[in-house]
Every structure is written in structure tokens, then in C-alpha cells.
Length: 314
Ligand code: BDR
Ligand code: CA
Image 1 (spheres, rainbow, N blue to C red):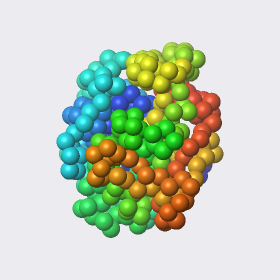
Image 2 (spheres, helix red, strand yellow):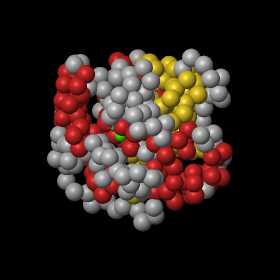
Image 3 (cartoon, protein in one colour):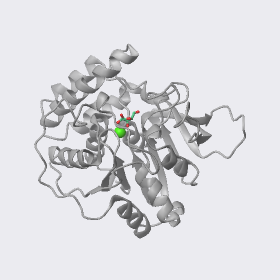
């Protein structure tokens, strides 16, 4: 087998974050060095607890989980209980976790891990607001050339926004952190709404998770049932978009994705469009290209991948 890819998952679970974490933990190609919590879909106390609940569901209590930022770098926290429910993981009742939360702060864990691993060997996978990464960049800018890549779920161009007409949730919550990331020089891959809106949790796909008959299969189906209700109504589709697992699936099967290397900047000032990913898809500015902007996926391949991997859990 080729060498494992070392990753840190930074996340705010979230039902779709939960599926992404399970996909990573089920994949032998990935070495999950740690999972860091950020405030986003729900407050930090819940996101860090939810990560530990998910690890215990996967029967992997040895995974290292770190709590990070409880609010955006410069703004008040905006949460999304209206999508994910008050726990962030509504749809399934999981027991309170026994596994420990690590003592180290997530930002310090990210810095220390990137500095202590071989240059360009650690990939950051971000599934929520970019606050922890923003703080790490301010505290220790020396990490930039050492990071292999940052693969994120966030933003939107052709699909617009999902919190405001211009802004997607993860960028909207902490646009200042997102700006630091996009301006940093780290190689970035973006899974925006443009692609995640093509990864729909149809009835048939959810049934396939339930048919696994396992704890993880049933939990996944329960989460997706809950999570999609809101989006189906909003978008009028069969199923809601499954956002965050695209970040992990990209690492496992990059061939199912296509996109374009472009310049992306973040709006932090305008009241109307704050949190907008200003993505220069047509290269009208000729500014340096700083991100691979994914627009398409092979959706059946994506769901087959998740289903096959999650089948390994009990
Ligand atoms: C993103 O926001 C959250 O609600 C989801 O978990 C995903 O990361 C989609 O806009
Ligand atoms: Ca998320």
C-alpha cells in the first residue's frame, strides 16, 4: 500500500461533518492525526462533544480530539440550529462520550503537528468556519510552507450562498479567518456549494445506508433524514446536499471531481455581501491563482465510496 496521507480534520459537527469524520476514520489510506473542534453549526462545547460521540460510535475512542475557538476571530458567533437541530446531530440519540478531550488547545495542536511532521506532509481538512486555522496562521505564520494542502468545504459561486444570497455558512461565520487562509499561500482545494449541491441524499441513497443494518448505517440514515428535510424544502430537490464528506472523498478519489485553478478572495467589509467567495472563474482579473475550485463530481461514485467505507463499521 502507498504511504498514508496524514490529515487533521477541523470541524463543527453537524450531521454532514459526522459522515465526513466516519468516512475518514474508515479509510486505511488516511492517518487522522487529530480532530479539532470549532464553533460553527452549534457552540464549541457541543461540537467537541459531538466529535467524541462520533468517534465512539465508530468504536475508535483512541482518536485525539481537541477543542479550539469558541467564537469567530472578530465577530459574534452565528450558529445553524435551524438546519442541524439544537444538538447539531439531531436525528439520532447517541450516548454521552467517555473518551477524553485532549488538554491542548486545537490551535496549538495544529501548529505543533505541522511543525513536527515532515515538510508538506500534513493536509488540513476543514469542514466548518476557518477560525482555528486563522488563529494558527496569525500565531505561527511559519506553518504555511510546511502544509501540504488545505481542502475545505466552503463558499459558492454559481450556486450563490446559503445564509445570504452571497455567502455560504462556513465562510459567512468567520470571513476574517477565511480571508487569512485564502491570502496565505497554502495550496487550497475548495468544495463549494457549486459541487455539494450535486451530491444529493436521495431516498434511494439514504435507504442504502439504513440497509447496512449496522449502528453506523442506521445513525447515518437518521442524520441524513433529519438534515435533508430543511434543504429539500428550501431547494425543492429529492434529497439535500451532502456537503462535508466531499472534502474527505476528494482525498480518497480525486478522479471523481473536476474543477479549475482560479483566484479566490473573500469579502469582509460589505454589509450586503460579507462572507462572499469572490471566485474569478473566468480569470477576468488575472490575479494569482490560489485555489482549485471544484464544480463537478460523479455523484454515484461519491455515495458508493461512502457506503462501501462505512460498511466496515458495526
Ligand atoms: C456547511 O455549513 C454547515 O451547515 C455544514 O456542516 C457544511 O459544513 C454548508 O454550508
Ligand atoms: Ca460543517
